[in-house]
Each structure stands twice: as structure tokens, then as C-alpha cells.
Image (tube, rainbow, N blue to C red; front, side, top):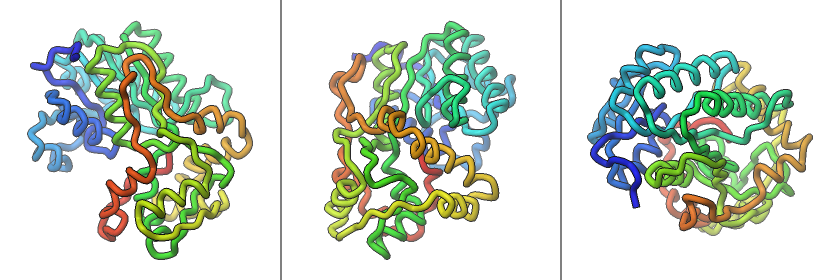
Length: 313
């Protein structure tokens, strides 16, 4: 049962990105109206073709966010990864705009776990900072966060290794158990919580089973109909590859999380290993298994023209 006014659109932040566009699609599938916040409508033709309302705004421009939020009661909020100072400004601007519009609730969609500062992994501390800002504002919100995304398999380098060489080589130990989730599952969970009026809780979205590296590639192989081997990529090599693909300095930031997992195995298990469990607002949520997800995306594994799908996470 929907607890929100379906005659009014929900606001989806970063709607032109991989995460945001998945939220847009999930909302449309539920029959909700969407106002898609993008930085450049000319680069959001795919969203425009869906018939959603496009609004241009920049998270560093408070006035543009206030204009984008007028008449909005509910939103799915994401803050792009960057420096903690920039993320603080962007969060402050988004929450100020939400309060000014009289927004009733927000689902905060994070890319990973939160840990209070001081923390060896900057992205976890940044997530905690974002939550603290919203909590202090008094705006009702629920949080959605993933374990690790299966969508990383669709990045060009990963697809090439899988299809051409029969190898999946992430920068994480084979023994690390992970209950892999997907961008679409997290988007579906976020929209479900928003639609049901859930305004509290930390909702960790995970897959239905926890698998080690060898179990993972067995399921990938079953979905693709071929044998796949698991190989842990050395972190220094991974860092260089990310720099080459996304620019100097990016590799160090992305690899930082995996260095944290390697040096804090108990924390890694807490963040990654536990399968999905029913929770308030998501009692009937059915996560997608690895083999099922691979079968759903089989054509994309063989699509050599597919664009990069974002960073590891």
C-alpha cells in the first residue's frame, strides 16, 4: 500500500547516472511520477524519452536545488563521491532545499558503509557525515546501502577478462564472503521504502546468499554457460588500472576501500558477508541471486560497445 501522494512526482537526485537512472526506472515501474534532477538536460535524452520531468540543478548551487525541490514531498537523495568538504556543502544544500520545500521524507542512497571519524577509510567517514547532517536537520529519512555491486562485472575491463580470458579478478581475497547485490535491487528497495512511508532505519541491501570467490565464479559461469576462474588482483595493479581508465589519483581513492577490507577482516565481514534479511518496510523484498542476475544481463556481457558502468563498489 502506497503511503505517498502518487499524483505528485518524487525527486530523484543524480538521475542521469547509473544509480539514479536505476531509481527512475524502479519508480516508473511502480507507477510513480518522477522529477529527474540532472546537471545537463541535453545529456539526459534517455530519461527524456521515458517521459519523466527533467530539472537542471547542481548540488553546489543552492538556488538551483531550491527551485528543483518546489512542490516535492519525497526524494531519493544521493551525494556524489568527492572530497569530504565538497560532500558536506552538497549535502547542506540538498537538505536546505528539502526543508525549504516542506519535504516530508527522503531515502538516502549511499554507496557503502558508514563509520564515524576517525576512520581509516575516508568514504565510510564521509557517509557518516552525510547521515549526521540529515539527522541534525530533523528531516525524516531512511538509509539504503549495498554490500557490493554485481554491476562491477559489466565494466569493460571485467567483461573482457570474463568473456575473453575466463577470469574474474577483483582486488579482494577469494576467501572473503560477499552477499552480492545489484544497482537495480538497491533502487527497487529505495523506491519501496519511499512508497511505504518508511522514514527511519539503516537498510543494508544484500543478495540472498553469501559466497566466496570460487562460489561466485561458479554462479557467474553457470549464468554465462562457460567456466570462469577467480583471481585476486593485487591492489597496486588495480590502482594503476583505475588511474589509466579514470585519471591519475582516482585509483588510490577507489583502492582505499579494498585496502581497508584487507586490513580489517572483521569489518569486511560485517559490511559484506551477511545475506539479506527481511526488515521493516522490506519484509517481502526478494533480492536477486548471482546466477539469476548474470542470466538477466547475459547480452550485456557480450556487448563490446557498452560504456563503463562506474567504479568498484
